Length: 223
Image (cartoon, rainbow, N blue to C red; front, side, top):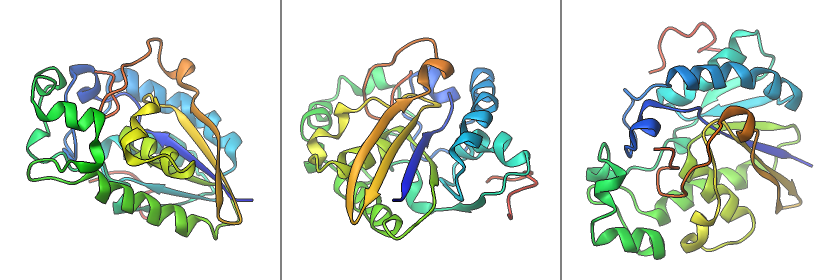
């Protein structure tokens, strides 16, 4: 029975600034985030994953880097479908300022009907998540996906058949791991937001972007 582990990147500079980072590849981990990434190494080792698929964004690469540096046996691949949602013109903006927009209510209450200005729709994001889930149904060994808060929440919603409008019910903290099992095309959530207490001391507000207000130079990159 295939097991899929979903790791949200560790704390980033955008997280602590309350900024909707989106696909900004200049966003990196904080000092605390790098510590979280290091602390995740023994946790990931216990999962005994055979393959790792990662978002191309720096904050995700930096999160998995300490594990890969330990001569991990797992194969590593970048999957563009795991990239953060494209928030369009909302990217780089403070969540506190975005909350005053009229469209904010739509994003929070009926995201299935919303497309970010010059960006992506929630329906499109769900479609790429479901395409990955379908492919992983054929895997026989544990898989680790390193990605972003909203992406993981959509994975969890899709796994249990929740509508897109309800995907924000899940909380996914930086550095946390959620687990989905697959059995003959059926999905079950084994756990969600695990390891967060070890990675973070403070709970977060559940908002778009995950909350908590190029990979170059990595030796294992081509492995």
